Amino acid sequence: TWTTEAFVEEAIREIRAKVGDKRVLLALSGGVDSSTLAFLLHKAIGDQLTCMFIDQGFMRKLEPERLVKLFQDEFHIPVEYVNARDRFLARLEGVTDPEEKRRRIGHEFIRVFEEQSKILGPFDYLAQGTLYPDVIESADTNVDPKTGERVAVKIKSHHNVGGLPKDLRFKLVEPLRKLFKDEVRKVGRSIGLPEAIVRRHPFPGPGLAIRIIGEVTAERLNILRDADLIVRQEINRHGLYKELWQAFAVLLPIRSVGVMGDQRTYAYPVVLRLVSSEDGMTADWSRVPYELLELISNRIVNEVKGVNRVAYDITSKPPGTIEWE
Ligand code: XMP
Image (cartoon, rainbow, N blue to C red; front, side, top):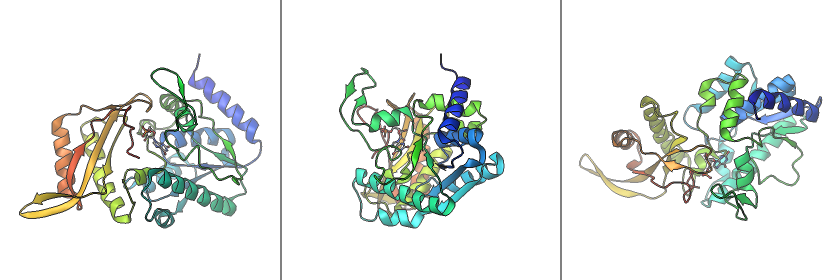
């Protein structure tokens, strides 16, 4: 039978055996996966590990600052902070295709990594928080979660699996690749990760860039960040954070007519995506109280300049995906 203790012991043994006295670079994102990975690797190889946080500019409001402070001050795991906001935004200029966005973000990510690794390295290994669902959803064959059948359809290129350039010089360490999300949480908890991170909702590698449909611009990022913060605040305030798998806003690149005071408005709509799920493979839209939806809608339209309409996504997965891109 599977126990977290046995998993941790075995993972640490495997990491040490694989890595030896070589140095490992870790892409820290602050989610439960990469944080668990950081704790696990720090435990296994100590200062042979370097954690790097690349700020792509697609994180939620205030999260980059909080993350670095938490790791350094509370966990005493040093983090190399890399501000790459401008170059990621420049790479996405004029790009509207979802797969092309992911591809470019993934490429840029690896490029920044390579550059930084020359400065801080040399490193032999790259550690990644790839999970089991990432592995199967990104392979050419997938397992249908309902029937268990293997189906040869490519769903999405999650940038932590595919899309790596051929000349990638790092070897990979992926100790979490056989785990589902709830198993990662158990492992994280058992090695001392605080509950706030253990319980944290998943957040996609490409971040807000795939929650802005169409072209990603600095203006749209700011609008979405503000709307997203309101969603999070109200979900927390109503004690629903723990019950939901994810709760976020999506910005649509269209505009519709509204009225505010006696002024006609012509602005973006925001879509709320609140879902419950066990592992992200299937998901159900959440039947949250209308009053909560009303509150979020009112706050977003009143407080976020550039948004005049809020819609609620009532599509489950399948046939929808959780993210919109
Ligand atoms: P979908 O949208 O495919 O998402 O139903 C399933 C789960 O995966 C997350 N997700 C990602 N995670 N990189 C990630 O690390 C990605 O590119 C990515 N795309 C989706 C999504 O948030 C959900 O929890």
